[in-house]
Amino acid sequence: MKYARSVIAWILISLAMQFAGLFYINNYFLKTETNFKAKKIEKPAEKPKEIEVSIPQGATMIQVSYDAKYISYYMDGAINVVNTKNGQAKTVKFDDKVKVSVYRWLQDTDRMFIAEKKAVKGDSGIDLTYYDASKDIKDENKFLALPDTKTEATDIQANTVTNVTYVKVNKGTSRNSIYRIDVMKSLDKVSTEANAIGDIKLFHLDDKFAYEDKLHGCVYVSDIKLPIQISGSQSLSLLGIDEDDIIYLGENSSDGKITKVYYGSLEKSTNEWQTINLNSAADKKDIYVSTDGNVYLNNNLKGIVQNLKSGKLTGYTGVMLQMCDSWMVSTENNKIIKTQYK
Image 1 (cartoon, rainbow, N blue to C red):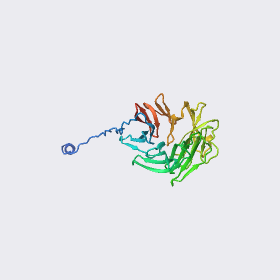
Image 2 (cartoon, helix red, strand yellow):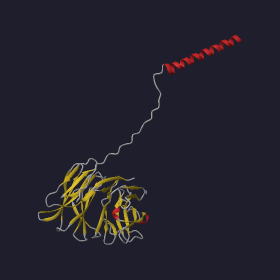
Image 3 (cartoon, rainbow, N blue to C red):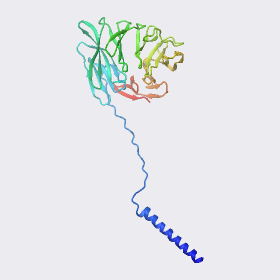
Image 4 (cartoon, helix red, strand yellow):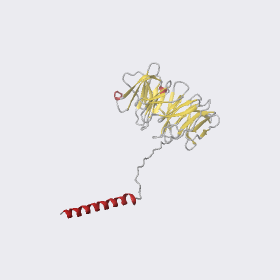
């Protein structure tokens, strides 16, 4: 028995040594691959560099396209358009004796509508033209005859969904008229409940618009006889309409500044609308309603824009020129500065 145990022990020792040798040959001597851990190094994405754009002294009607891709201004009888991404500049020229009354960039497109005042066959009138900045193409849209030389086009609003354009015309006094141009270029005067019309804003999903009655401090919607009524409010201003056709109104204080913002759908009672109370009264021009329904308030003294719904603050340098949906554009030493909202 003692001899048998010794034989078994030596057999086990021999097998153990063989397994150890095979393990070494397989994992070290004959190994052709190396195991290692790789760590991916993320390189921060570089922001596209913006071209420095300067606005010359004497330029007027300075405007920014809806996405801040283009800056435009009126000077020496022409509209100058500069691409802020590549610096490419284009000039929109006009015939002699033509005066640009007003022009507006359209929402969600690189086009602008232009109102050109000139005499045609002895009659005073306005040519409504459009300019496509991405294609550098200018074309005629419609001619609007005017009763006299004092009448001017003061605003153009266009809906890119319904392809309907509205033009506000001032008759040299406090009286205004609004004309509608449809996709077939048919022109009709729109009946309104007020003559002293202030700002007009178009609904996005429906062919209708809201407008201010500056004389009585109220806001109407086209085809509705009565103004929008909000309990406890004596005077209202029109601030904007978002892509869901939510309308935004400002409550006016005695000095004409905005103290509250009301917003809601026309399909609901105004008692169900939301209210934003401002910490201090603000000028209407410092409030911007984006198409996605954000409400921005500019503080010129501090150089800060606040999203009144989220509370987020975004600082900027220079003097505010225009707030857009994704960017705010300011000027410093005649140079354009673009700042993205936080």
